[in-house]
Length: 182
Image (cartoon, rainbow, N blue to C red; front, side, top):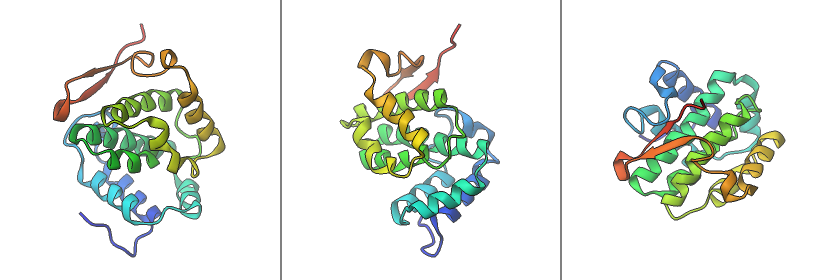
């Protein structure tokens, strides 16, 4: 599904958010059909429409907390999809979803999602730092600090086990599940 070349990135983000707000299971780590039509459309926009600080500022001006979580969910779900089909280019583009908001998403949730994206990157023969590098320029200072802080942790202080995320399956069956803290 191609994006309309006259649409701006903020238009495409708004259309994505309208579509996923009607889909409650979208909040889950990796459930349902992946990618959804809305995810494909936003991914195509990220791939084709120039990303600029001006567009990011425009999105941040109207983004609320629930929408910010949807964008981070997009990044995580598309990273899982990328790992499922073996396409690192998808992962490198979709991580833009981590930097749209102005710190509306709880930093601990960002760390958990980064552990999943990192696992996906490793499965694709990439590393998280490289995958995120091009998009960090658009992050708020606090989000950039959170992401860089995660990436600079020693291996024993980051990853799925530390974040209590269980992984099962491989290929098209790859799935992540949050484990209880108790």
